[in-house]
Length: 445
Image (cartoon, rainbow, N blue to C red; front, side, top):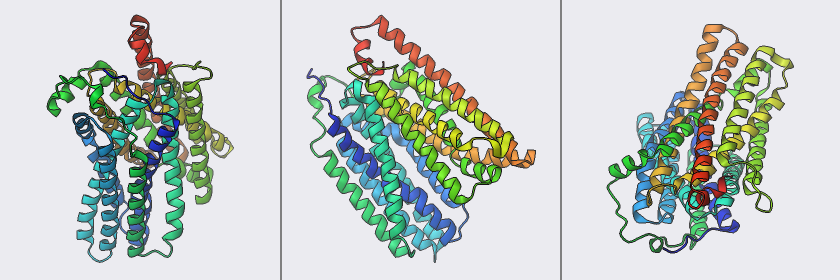
């Protein structure tokens, strides 16, 4: 069997451009179009909320999409095709918003189709991109690779919102469609350029007698692997806790600490800055200096979850303390903890994807991607709904938000325990099978 060829830093950055292109289209659909529906069209906020939830729900197809790339043996066609479908969905969503101004029902029907396409595109491109990274990035570079790719995605978010925000004024439906089409076309061109000739042919690396069963059989085989099940549960619990804070942090700052809209937006920037610091910290620790790495990816995931638990518990205390609490510092530390655990979790995905029955990498990554998407879809809604319910029952904003933050802290505590078990299992397996498992897990500690 031919040794697997690995990507260098330039190849990793090229895949980061693909992730940035993906993020550019998604942020228009989930942010810009959200605002247009609520403000310019005066439609109920639950409409864009339902559409965003739909795009997450459709990503339950990720295991099937990953299986498709397993069967074909190459990931590039699924990445390019996924970006194409995503771009088409984005353009149709913009057209649907234009229709809503005169034909609401028809516009909503088209928007439903568009956001389903967006979910399919994200699932196809995102899953195959992570599998390609998992298969062709050296184990010692996985933490840094995850950081680079996700930082470039965030950069894509920021650049797109700034550019689109400037070009969209004054607003018109035609302008929204034109801008979205330009972004979608640009994303496809960037993806084609970034992936051209990057993926090595893997058919020669696989034994010709490998049997590729139907999807249902492959899914059952993967789910039978205890590590896959345990890691899927960890991804769901941790991402549920991570996403539940998204929609309530800025309202918390406004109602309890008196932050203005501009100040609360700056607070979100403080959190994102902390996320970047946490990502870089894990990248440096995971890559190491002169071959010496600090901790395993699973240990960093556990530590990041535990630190997130502490930071959220501190926010709960801030809900009772009020204006005297060091909110900005607290939120920055929460961002650092979130960034550390997120990159460590993604790096662990990359390590685990190829650890098991061969030709199932896409199914494994698809399972974890589906767990993450479901958690994000549920978390944002539950976090906001729980804060509303707590305020209605308690009658005070600070204690109500504190109760929700405390619940999220408990979720992160559970996630930390799950990650600790995965770390212990990895260490045990490495010590028992140093010649095989140890080589596979070299990038984790």
